[in-house]
Amino acid sequence: MEEILASIKKVIAEDKGGRAGEARVEQPLDEVPGDEEDEEAVLELNEPLAPPVEAGPPLLDQAAAEASRSALEQLSTVAASVPAPPPTNPLEDMVREMLRPMLKQWLDEHLPPMVEEHVKREITRITGRPL
Image (cartoon, rainbow, N blue to C red; front, side, top):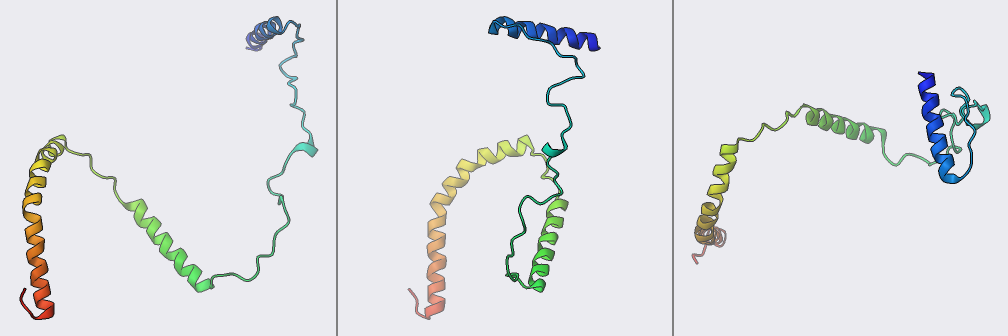
């Protein structure tokens, strides 16, 4: 395995060296540049990057924060338990698309007079005077 990797690295180095016009020295596989462990260069994630800033007293009362947290947890629980929508039925989709123009035509003809009649009835009921 190491021989195969070494030969691949050699071909790549020769190809790059040929294009750049310079010969490259091949390094053994176990000596990769930058592989040295330098304790100074390692950033430990458990150390704070900046000193903590004093934010002052909390803006929200502990009881209000707990109530909000509880409501959000309840929402999260409900959202996680909602089943996925059922797959659509192609026949139902086709019928829905066929009915759409007919429904639009019916609504265009009948909805304005129906709304006008209901508004007149409601105005008469509220004012006590017929229109």
